[in-house]
Image (spheres, rainbow, N blue to C red):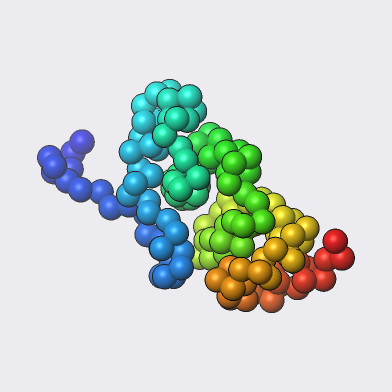
Length: 151
């Protein structure tokens, strides 16, 4: 490319300055999976065996930030089937809300799904002080519907 020096380094997209979010997501470890997905004609099967509960959120976030819609969709399907549950919903909701508030699109659906899990299983969240503290950091507009749920 004209104007590009050989060996030039391209930075990963910046995440919001939030210590909790950054502790949960390492975009650097997700990048090789995203590249493999792209180079394999956007086939999920090319990376499916390497996607785990530990890295799926990072893969999803990177795909959303880079607007790789097929990867974001498949990664969230994986999260919904294998990761999202009462023990992870508060952390996932926190991640989605922080990224939404930073102006990143694509997190409305995941935030809503996490909120639904929390509405059904809030009693479990209350037994995990770390997750409850994270939940308390969410905006009132997110908290209120969950706390008002009568399930």
